[in-house]
Length: 115
Image 1: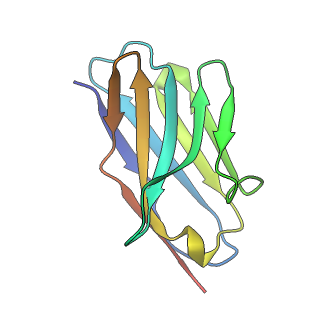
Image 2: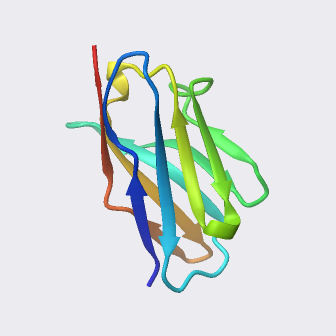
Protein backbone atom coordinates (compact mmCIF):
# COMPACT_ATOMS: atom_id res chain seq x y z
CA UNK A 1 0.00 0.00 0.00
CA UNK A 2 0.95 3.64 -0.27
CA UNK A 3 2.77 5.18 2.67
CA UNK A 4 3.37 8.86 3.35
CA UNK A 5 6.55 9.82 5.17
CA UNK A 6 6.73 13.30 6.68
CA UNK A 7 9.73 15.29 7.81
CA UNK A 8 10.70 18.84 8.71
CA UNK A 9 8.71 19.49 11.87
CA UNK A 10 10.29 20.95 14.95
CA UNK A 11 10.51 23.89 17.32
CA UNK A 12 10.86 27.42 16.01
CA UNK A 13 10.43 30.91 17.43
CA UNK A 14 7.66 33.19 16.28
CA UNK A 15 8.54 34.84 13.00
CA UNK A 16 10.69 31.94 11.90
CA UNK A 17 10.27 29.45 9.08
CA UNK A 18 10.00 25.71 8.57
CA UNK A 19 9.69 23.53 5.50
CA UNK A 20 7.72 20.30 5.72
CA UNK A 21 8.21 17.46 3.26
CA UNK A 22 6.08 14.42 2.52
CA UNK A 23 7.06 11.61 0.18
CA UNK A 24 4.70 8.91 -1.05
CA UNK A 25 6.11 5.41 -1.40
CA UNK A 26 4.82 1.95 -2.24
CA UNK A 27 2.48 1.04 -5.07
CA UNK A 28 2.07 4.59 -6.28
CA UNK A 29 0.07 5.36 -9.37
CA UNK A 30 -1.01 8.87 -10.19
CA UNK A 31 -2.07 10.85 -7.12
CA UNK A 32 -4.55 13.56 -7.95
CA UNK A 33 -4.36 15.63 -4.77
CA UNK A 34 -1.71 16.12 -2.12
CA UNK A 35 -1.93 18.46 0.80
CA UNK A 36 -1.55 19.25 4.46
CA UNK A 37 -3.90 19.28 7.41
CA UNK A 38 -3.19 20.25 11.00
CA UNK A 39 -4.70 19.57 14.38
CA UNK A 40 -4.06 21.44 17.61
CA UNK A 41 -4.89 19.91 21.01
CA UNK A 42 -8.62 20.09 21.69
CA UNK A 43 -9.42 21.31 18.19
CA UNK A 44 -10.69 19.75 14.99
CA UNK A 45 -8.39 18.82 12.16
CA UNK A 46 -8.38 21.52 9.52
CA UNK A 47 -7.18 21.86 5.96
CA UNK A 48 -4.03 23.96 5.65
CA UNK A 49 -3.23 23.69 1.96
CA UNK A 50 -3.80 21.37 -0.99
CA UNK A 51 -2.61 21.12 -4.56
CA UNK A 52 -4.01 19.25 -7.54
CA UNK A 53 -1.87 17.82 -10.34
CA UNK A 54 -3.03 20.73 -12.45
CA UNK A 55 -1.31 23.13 -10.08
CA UNK A 56 -4.51 24.51 -8.60
CA UNK A 57 -4.07 25.32 -4.91
CA UNK A 58 -6.31 25.93 -1.93
CA UNK A 59 -5.26 27.54 1.36
CA UNK A 60 -6.84 28.13 4.70
CA UNK A 61 -7.50 31.83 5.21
CA UNK A 62 -5.33 31.83 8.32
CA UNK A 63 -2.20 30.81 6.39
CA UNK A 64 -2.73 32.43 3.01
CA UNK A 65 0.19 34.70 2.20
CA UNK A 66 2.47 32.99 4.72
CA UNK A 67 2.48 29.33 3.64
CA UNK A 68 3.21 27.93 0.20
CA UNK A 69 2.47 24.41 -1.01
CA UNK A 70 4.43 22.82 -3.84
CA UNK A 71 4.69 19.41 -5.49
CA UNK A 72 7.32 17.38 -7.26
CA UNK A 73 5.22 14.83 -9.10
CA UNK A 74 8.22 12.88 -10.38
CA UNK A 75 9.25 12.25 -6.77
CA UNK A 76 5.68 11.94 -5.46
CA UNK A 77 6.56 14.55 -2.89
CA UNK A 78 4.69 17.53 -1.49
CA UNK A 79 6.19 20.41 0.46
CA UNK A 80 4.86 23.09 2.75
CA UNK A 81 6.98 26.20 3.17
CA UNK A 82 5.86 27.99 6.32
CA UNK A 83 7.02 31.56 6.87
CA UNK A 84 6.23 34.17 9.51
CA UNK A 85 5.16 31.45 11.90
CA UNK A 86 2.90 32.32 14.81
CA UNK A 87 2.21 30.50 18.08
CA UNK A 88 -1.28 29.74 16.74
CA UNK A 89 0.36 27.63 14.03
CA UNK A 90 1.41 25.12 16.70
CA UNK A 91 -0.15 21.77 15.81
CA UNK A 92 0.49 18.31 14.47
CA UNK A 93 0.70 18.58 10.69
CA UNK A 94 -0.52 15.65 8.61
CA UNK A 95 0.33 14.92 5.01
CA UNK A 96 -2.60 13.80 2.86
CA UNK A 97 -2.87 12.23 -0.58
CA UNK A 98 -5.97 11.29 -2.55
CA UNK A 99 -6.66 9.44 -5.77
CA UNK A 100 -10.11 8.43 -7.00
CA UNK A 101 -11.48 6.23 -4.20
CA UNK A 102 -8.39 6.07 -1.98
CA UNK A 103 -7.04 8.45 0.64
CA UNK A 104 -3.78 8.14 2.54
CA UNK A 105 -2.50 9.91 5.65
CA UNK A 106 0.91 10.40 7.14
CA UNK A 107 1.56 9.84 10.83
CA UNK A 108 1.95 13.54 11.51
CA UNK A 109 4.83 15.79 12.43
CA UNK A 110 4.82 18.21 15.36
CA UNK A 111 5.30 21.91 14.71
CA UNK A 112 5.76 24.08 17.79
CA UNK A 113 6.07 27.85 17.56
CA UNK A 114 7.23 29.65 20.70
CA UNK A 115 6.52 33.28 21.47
